Image 1 (cartoon, helix red, strand yellow):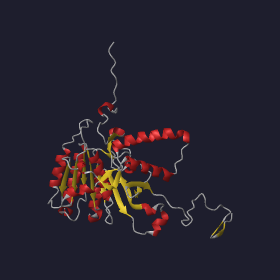
Image 2 (cartoon, rainbow, N blue to C red):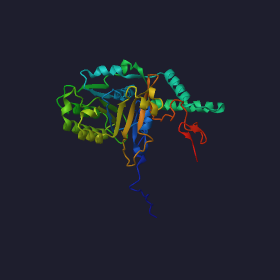
Image 3 (cartoon, rainbow, N blue to C red):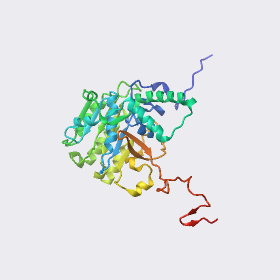
Image 4 (tube, one colour):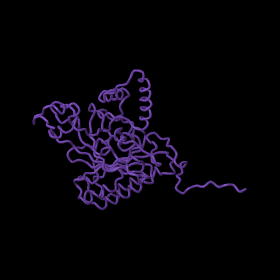
Length: 360
């Protein structure tokens, strides 16, 4: 009797080809996707796990405030803390001096106080007989979280030994006559991290600040810059790396700005809050603690055609204790802002109002 041959469908996915990474800072996602942390825990949750490995992230800057630097600094610090090589390009004359402004990971004492404050804000109440189980889950979650993402204290600079080695490469694009030099540096950097069937020996990060800024000569080379972005995206697809590019959309023509946005796998934008906007303060709760808004325009879809539907696309940027970056959904303030009563505690049907009694 002939041996029966196992029937294998062409649509069956080879699970054995995708192995779990052993490097810190990388975690498995759905459909064979791997994620790296953005350096902001709330942003990782919003994006469904973080930045997909091999993706191009673009952040549209705001001309009123440099809030994009908050995202860029945490992204760079997260990679350096996890000993991941970094390529940083900037229109500044001395880009290495920017490394001294990167935030430092918070201590366990700071994280404990932050978690305690967060629980108090949410009004969490736990029965005494379940507290021991809850604390165990928190400790386990904290240990797994620190392997992937850290909380960074904006008041403390990153220790020098994290960026003083050979794993950080800085490039100044201020005097570059064309993007060819930056392209060659990116190609050389990404060649160190080839993607070989899910085998992770190392991964890298690329951070490009204010591409096409007016202080560099690349601001008048629209087609050359667009070609560079397209080439960088193709190189990232075959490398274990993630790249972030921030750019000022107000300095680009509308057509080229749309082309840039189309090239991004993840598209974010930041916007400053106008000073003393009383109308906005009446609409939103916690307005006095906000420093800006984060808009999520596009999320990477790698190895899938199913779109990810977010609960919200606009989030408030807050600095908890002026130290930690917190992203929250926007909440509408109560109708009666003076009394602070909610909809459920307002007057009943038979109650009187300023306009008079209600008739049925």
